[in-house]
Amino acid sequence: MILFSQGDLAYEVDLSRGVVEDLAHSKLGERTFLAWERTTAQRIRPVIVRSLPPTSSGDLEALDRVRARLREEARLATYLQHPRIARIFGIHEVQGVLYVVSEVVEGTSINTLISYSIMREAPFSPAFCMYVGAEVASTLHYAHTCKDESGAPLGIVHRDVNPARLYLGPEGEVVLTDFARARSLLPGRVETTLPRPQGDVAYCSPEALLGEETDPRSDLFALGLVLLELATLRHLYSTGNARSEDLEAALTPAVKDQVLDAAITAAEADLPAHAEDCILRAATFAPQDVEELTEPLQPPLRSIIRRLLQRKPEDRYPSAAALESDLRAGLASLATAYGAAEALEEGRNSRDGASMNRRVAGPTNGNGLPPVIEAEEDIITAPGGGN
View 1 (cartoon, rainbow, N blue to C red):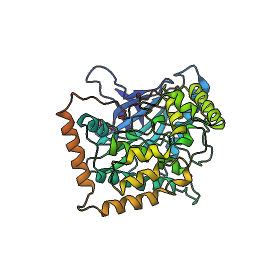
View 2: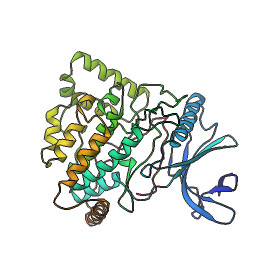
View 3: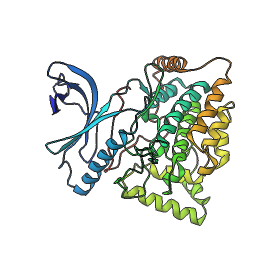
View 4: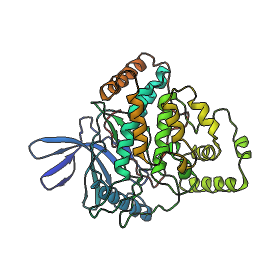
């Protein structure tokens, strides 16, 4: 079935099973398909197509915001020309329907690799964690320092760095996907209606969860949560045996008001049920909690993660470039070289080990937190073509 045509190209979905299969959809009517870009003579390449009809929801104001954000994401993508950032090929409007055509990212998501690790009951090696971290830090540095055609900084903050947005590719490369929730200084950018956290709340920085200003160091905190999970299979925001009333009792009156405001915002924004737990944990975790979680790790990974997971942004790495430098130095200090080939092999071994231990089932996010349920105004995307 042809979704739409543009010039000499058409975009078709496979009807071999008799139905059109959505990769994802949102409450506002956006649908995401795996499709083929083709000419009249042949298929050219697989692509991801996201579609948003003009009347898919009765909430026309929310629809207008989503359509504006899709256009903003496509405009931002014209500046993000990096081999480790998933590409958007174009945005088209046909008979009132908005279509965004994106790259299919090959490989396996870090989210899936964490699930394999949980099934094997074995975290990834420090070398794998430092390699993935260094690759992502390099890409984030590019995005954070990206400029427009006049040389003005674009001020990009990804705001949704989490295991589902990171892919280990077929050559061992690490790809960062989905800038749909990025903050930028693009002229005419769409302001959020609420000071709510963007993306997966389980991987948001404390300042994002508590309604404070975010900056590139917020992305670094999120990356720290990913690395902690890869290295230990544990999550900083998992409350474990802690009782909510005990955590709340530790709050000062000012912070308690901040937590209450953030929880109200989360409810108004229709964030998932576990958002309130993440907000409370973000406001109450202490340095000793991070030290305890990272104690089994060997330096330098232990000290790197501890610095990333500082509550105050000024206590973290000042930039993604500084983080990458420490991670590369950590890799260089290893007894044997570790790079893309070794990471790919470790990923395959994790998959194979998991297939032999399927009696152990892990949560989707591998963090002890429920799967994410997107807010009504969210765009649910599926930029990756892997597992």
